[in-house]
Image 1 (tube, rainbow, N blue to C red):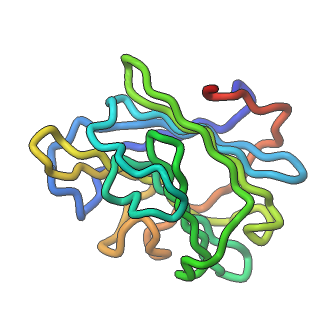
Image 2: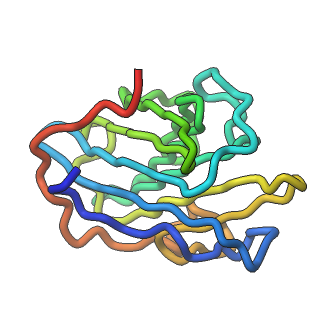
Length: 178
């Protein structure tokens, strides 16, 4: 991941129930001619990681959310939890299934996920998007931070997207776990 763009996930989202959260994460972003790759790291171990099935109610767990927009303004939404379960939708259609792959692992310092999706599934190299991290506090309140400043509509609100100026070409991807 040395050749990837590194971005911080630390802007407190307006919908976060904890306004003074210390939650933060980082994102590494790169691509090759066929796939977009993201490595995501949270500085906190997950409190909730119950779901294991694809397209389940992953928003009930500690998650990373990835929102992308292509040149035709189609929207793509992915959620990954600490179990490596994934949710995906295209322009709000939950029945759509991408050929994305993800893996996750937990360690003493937090949790991480690697995610890759074919560029052909998302209309080419994305122009805009956001990546968010949501984590439940031990008391059950949700804490939310994002890469771009999220609007009231959440991580998947196009008005809150940041622009991807340059996504570097990848040489290889590392395996996060077994």
